[in-house]
Image (cartoon, rainbow, N blue to C red):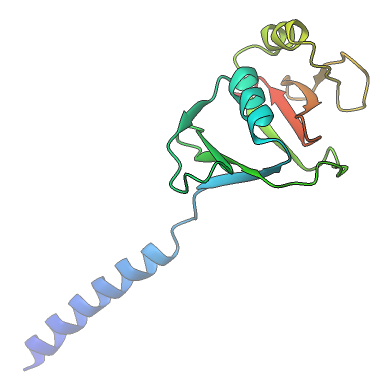
Length: 150
Protein backbone atom coordinates (compact mmCIF):
# COMPACT_ATOMS: atom_id res chain seq x y z
CA UNK A 1 0.00 0.00 0.00
CA UNK A 2 2.87 2.35 0.85
CA UNK A 3 4.45 1.63 -2.54
CA UNK A 4 1.22 2.43 -4.41
CA UNK A 5 0.88 5.68 -2.42
CA UNK A 6 4.52 6.59 -3.05
CA UNK A 7 4.25 5.82 -6.79
CA UNK A 8 1.02 7.84 -7.03
CA UNK A 9 2.62 10.75 -5.16
CA UNK A 10 5.66 10.73 -7.45
CA UNK A 11 3.49 10.60 -10.60
CA UNK A 12 1.28 13.40 -9.27
CA UNK A 13 4.38 15.46 -8.46
CA UNK A 14 5.80 14.98 -11.96
CA UNK A 15 2.49 15.88 -13.61
CA UNK A 16 2.12 18.92 -11.34
CA UNK A 17 5.67 20.10 -12.09
CA UNK A 18 5.09 19.73 -15.83
CA UNK A 19 1.82 21.67 -15.60
CA UNK A 20 3.50 24.43 -13.60
CA UNK A 21 6.38 24.60 -16.09
CA UNK A 22 3.87 25.01 -18.90
CA UNK A 23 2.16 27.84 -17.00
CA UNK A 24 5.49 29.64 -16.72
CA UNK A 25 6.11 29.52 -20.46
CA UNK A 26 6.49 33.10 -21.68
CA UNK A 27 3.93 34.46 -24.09
CA UNK A 28 4.99 34.99 -27.69
CA UNK A 29 3.97 37.80 -30.00
CA UNK A 30 1.12 36.77 -32.28
CA UNK A 31 0.40 39.98 -34.20
CA UNK A 32 0.55 43.75 -34.21
CA UNK A 33 -2.55 45.61 -35.37
CA UNK A 34 -2.27 49.05 -36.97
CA UNK A 35 -5.46 51.06 -37.50
CA UNK A 36 -5.29 52.89 -40.84
CA UNK A 37 -7.48 55.35 -42.74
CA UNK A 38 -6.75 54.10 -46.27
CA UNK A 39 -6.18 50.35 -46.39
CA UNK A 40 -5.04 50.27 -50.02
CA UNK A 41 -2.49 53.07 -49.52
CA UNK A 42 -1.14 51.56 -46.30
CA UNK A 43 -0.96 48.08 -47.83
CA UNK A 44 1.11 49.38 -50.74
CA UNK A 45 3.30 51.36 -48.33
CA UNK A 46 4.17 48.46 -46.00
CA UNK A 47 4.52 46.02 -48.87
CA UNK A 48 6.85 48.26 -50.90
CA UNK A 49 8.89 49.85 -48.10
CA UNK A 50 9.48 46.69 -46.05
CA UNK A 51 9.01 44.01 -48.73
CA UNK A 52 6.41 42.33 -46.53
CA UNK A 53 4.50 39.35 -47.88
CA UNK A 54 0.70 39.44 -47.72
CA UNK A 55 -0.88 36.35 -46.20
CA UNK A 56 -4.52 35.21 -46.29
CA UNK A 57 -6.79 36.89 -43.78
CA UNK A 58 -9.91 35.11 -42.57
CA UNK A 59 -12.39 38.00 -42.58
CA UNK A 60 -12.40 38.69 -46.33
CA UNK A 61 -14.27 41.94 -45.67
CA UNK A 62 -11.91 44.34 -47.52
CA UNK A 63 -11.08 45.99 -44.17
CA UNK A 64 -7.94 44.00 -43.34
CA UNK A 65 -4.52 43.22 -44.78
CA UNK A 66 -2.33 40.69 -43.03
CA UNK A 67 1.42 40.44 -43.52
CA UNK A 68 3.76 37.78 -42.21
CA UNK A 69 6.62 38.93 -40.01
CA UNK A 70 8.21 35.49 -40.04
CA UNK A 71 8.78 33.99 -36.61
CA UNK A 72 7.97 37.39 -35.03
CA UNK A 73 4.28 37.01 -35.90
CA UNK A 74 2.06 39.06 -38.17
CA UNK A 75 1.21 42.67 -38.94
CA UNK A 76 -2.49 43.39 -39.39
CA UNK A 77 -3.63 46.59 -41.08
CA UNK A 78 -7.23 47.47 -40.22
CA UNK A 79 -9.28 50.00 -42.21
CA UNK A 80 -11.27 52.57 -40.24
CA UNK A 81 -9.02 55.17 -38.60
CA UNK A 82 -10.03 58.80 -38.90
CA UNK A 83 -6.56 59.71 -40.16
CA UNK A 84 -5.97 62.87 -38.15
CA UNK A 85 -4.24 61.49 -35.05
CA UNK A 86 -0.82 62.68 -33.89
CA UNK A 87 1.44 59.88 -32.67
CA UNK A 88 4.41 60.14 -30.34
CA UNK A 89 7.75 58.86 -31.64
CA UNK A 90 8.18 56.78 -28.46
CA UNK A 91 5.30 54.57 -29.64
CA UNK A 92 6.72 53.01 -32.79
CA UNK A 93 7.16 49.76 -34.70
CA UNK A 94 10.75 48.77 -35.38
CA UNK A 95 12.10 46.72 -38.26
CA UNK A 96 15.71 45.57 -38.55
CA UNK A 97 17.49 45.50 -41.90
CA UNK A 98 20.98 44.35 -42.93
CA UNK A 99 22.02 47.91 -43.86
CA UNK A 100 20.45 51.19 -42.76
CA UNK A 101 22.48 52.99 -45.45
CA UNK A 102 20.95 50.81 -48.19
CA UNK A 103 17.49 51.27 -46.67
CA UNK A 104 17.96 55.06 -46.67
CA UNK A 105 18.67 54.87 -50.42
CA UNK A 106 15.35 53.07 -50.87
CA UNK A 107 13.50 55.72 -48.85
CA UNK A 108 15.14 58.50 -50.86
CA UNK A 109 14.16 56.78 -54.12
CA UNK A 110 10.55 56.66 -52.88
CA UNK A 111 10.66 60.28 -51.61
CA UNK A 112 9.98 59.19 -48.03
CA UNK A 113 11.50 61.57 -45.52
CA UNK A 114 13.23 60.24 -42.42
CA UNK A 115 15.04 61.63 -39.41
CA UNK A 116 17.24 60.67 -36.51
CA UNK A 117 15.93 60.31 -32.93
CA UNK A 118 16.48 64.02 -32.24
CA UNK A 119 14.43 64.98 -35.32
CA UNK A 120 17.22 66.05 -37.66
CA UNK A 121 15.96 65.53 -41.22
CA UNK A 122 17.93 62.85 -43.10
CA UNK A 123 19.87 62.17 -39.88
CA UNK A 124 20.95 58.74 -38.73
CA UNK A 125 21.28 58.01 -35.01
CA UNK A 126 24.27 55.93 -33.94
CA UNK A 127 23.41 54.30 -30.63
CA UNK A 128 26.09 53.74 -27.98
CA UNK A 129 26.05 50.03 -28.89
CA UNK A 130 26.90 50.81 -32.53
CA UNK A 131 23.42 50.23 -33.96
CA UNK A 132 22.29 52.72 -36.63
CA UNK A 133 18.65 53.81 -36.59
CA UNK A 134 16.28 56.12 -38.44
CA UNK A 135 12.65 57.14 -37.94
CA UNK A 136 9.86 57.97 -40.36
CA UNK A 137 6.07 57.85 -40.56
CA UNK A 138 3.62 55.67 -42.40
CA UNK A 139 0.75 57.30 -44.37
CA UNK A 140 -1.32 57.68 -41.16
CA UNK A 141 1.53 59.17 -39.14
CA UNK A 142 2.45 56.05 -37.14
CA UNK A 143 6.15 56.24 -36.28
CA UNK A 144 8.45 53.55 -37.64
CA UNK A 145 12.04 52.80 -36.72
CA UNK A 146 14.49 50.98 -38.93
CA UNK A 147 17.78 49.81 -37.48
CA UNK A 148 20.60 47.40 -38.25
CA UNK A 149 20.50 45.54 -34.92
CA UNK A 150 21.34 41.87 -35.19
